Image (cartoon, rainbow, N blue to C red; front, side, top):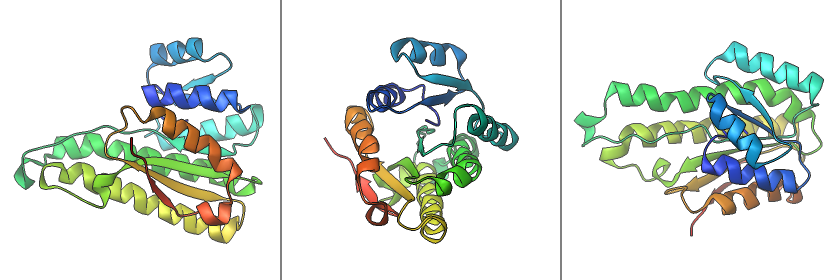
Amino acid sequence: LAGATSEAGLVVARAAVAAGATVVATGRDRVKLDDLAAEVPGVLTEEIDLTDGDAVDSLAARLHDTVGPVDGVLHLVGGFRRGEGIPGQSDADWEALETALTALRHVSRAFYPDLVASEAGRLAIVSSTSATKPHRNTANYATIKAASEAWTGAVASGFGADAPGRGAAVIFAVSGLAGLEQQLADRFVSLWSEDAAVLNGSRHVLTA
């Protein structure tokens, strides 16, 4: 779980552990990671800045050797910024939002070899409905989400070539994640019971 110290991370971690998965939760806040581990016994935690590509590469290699090959990644790194109209889309907000895209690139590249080698590799991201319906007040945010979806689509293309019928990259889009955490968790866990060829490159809008 990439960026697991939110409420969504807690709910997904609990569901994945209940399904029998070995869960590794990452985040930048040691206290929040410890709280997560206390809430969900059995979860392994890793304090890491996912925008540091070298650190992510090292993590992927270490987990491969210690925990075992990774079969699934859920990217939860995010954040929301808005501004008033196009002139209000500040560089500071863009830079803050861009960290989510940078983290996605690093994580998907580092764990790609494990995912394509898996009998059922899965990569999923949480995006926003604004990626396909951008608004002037959230142009920075919508653009980063659209770019994240494009990157995930490219990963899906990679899976289609390198792990046909086995690997799947999936987008979950929400207008807001609050209240949908359990639905996200259930859908993520269910990815391993669904046909990879059908799932790969798909986009699913989650609603209440």
